[in-house]
Length: 125
Image (cartoon, rainbow, N blue to C red):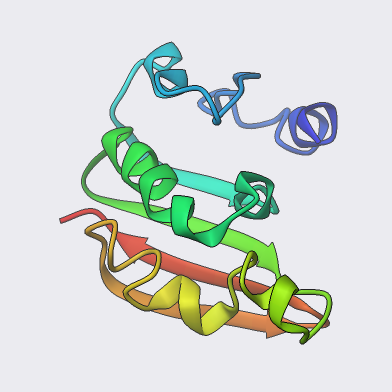
């Protein structure tokens, strides 16, 4: 994903790429901040339980300037069975108190839902 992103954004020298493990408590310390925007592309489900996602989003928020934009693209749970939906967030849960809003983002919304993917956004106050 990083190689693909670097190739696609090669014409944008302001784009920053850091390979890290967001399951570590201080992964966000590797960045020089603040940023105008943070994009998370199909990464939130790697937390492996949706109860941990607001903490990840708070860490994203620590990287943003006030008014900065968080863009989250992820996929909907692959099945509607209780053990799957207990772990993975739906698009509605990303927007609601379980994720972006719970992490302190405002003007939270859904920009797109398409073929099992959703894009949600929020602003850092």
